[in-house]
Amino acid sequence: MTFKVLITCPPMLRQIDQFYDLFQDLGIRVTTPDVVQTLSVEKLLAIVPQHDGWIIGDDSATSEVFTAGKSGKLRAAVKWGIGVDNVDFSACEKLGIPITNTPGMFGAEVADLAMCYVLGLARDAFYIDREIRKGGWPKPAGISLVGKTIGIVGLGDIGRNIAKRARAHDLKIIGWDPYTKSIPDYIKVKDAFPSGISSCDFIVFSCALTKDSHHLLNESILGLLKPGVRVINVSRGPLIKETALLEGLANKIITSAALDVFEVEPLGQSNKILNHPKCIVGSHNGSNTIDAVVRASYEAIRLLDAMLKGHSWQ
Image 1 (spheres, rainbow, N blue to C red):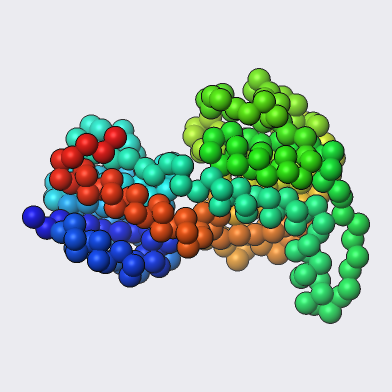
Image 2 (image 1 turned 45 degrees about the horizontal axis):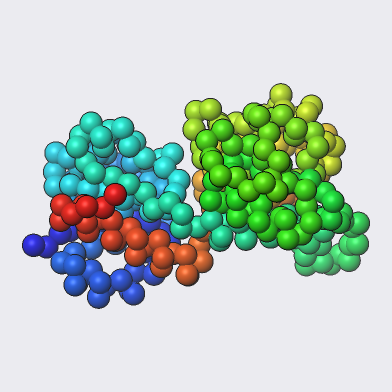
């Protein structure tokens, strides 16, 4: 039996050539649309019902889309990666569509980027680079990492990997996570966010986006922050209220920020963060290494193939 599978995950699509032999062996024919970030809901409503399986990127995988898929051929789906805030899992459960994600794939890669941002903000490395390209020769005084405190919001796979790297830089580590168990003893876990936040020289957001974590950094938090704090987000944009971040930067409560994710993506040219001299901007690319993409893609294929063939996959 041959199954038709839709893939809408841009990192996987960019490496798609190396999976064709496997698809052929498994009896899978793939549809690989041109996706920059996501497909529109209108496009998904038209194309998803034509497929037996779907490997989902950051698309709006809503109840409406899954209902349309169920009325067509859709039998199973896999959310590529760990973030699931764009996917209506409850709709799949009601519709009887097996679905899962691929957790534990990118902890090291996203943590590497987070520490790149920590180092870049500590020494103003990205600011110096930009100013030199404009003809300047700036020499801002940075801060040393030894003895400073980093606060990590979310101590899952990514957060624990960030802590491991922070420890190697002799940073003191505090963290917040009401769900994760087996947290290393070198992380001082606080009862609830934002308890203890005033001690932080760096704050890194690495938690999942839920209704409870939406806009964790907001105007009410600014007064609790240590003046000069540096803020990093490698998880989901809406964890930070961007107007509050800009207010903190303007008031110099926040010295600088590095964001790989934003409230609206792609980042619009009118967004004030884009040209802010004390902000580093990314393209929601923290997990995107060749090694990690291949690893996660093989896992997504394995899971979807098992679902479509009625085999055990959990």
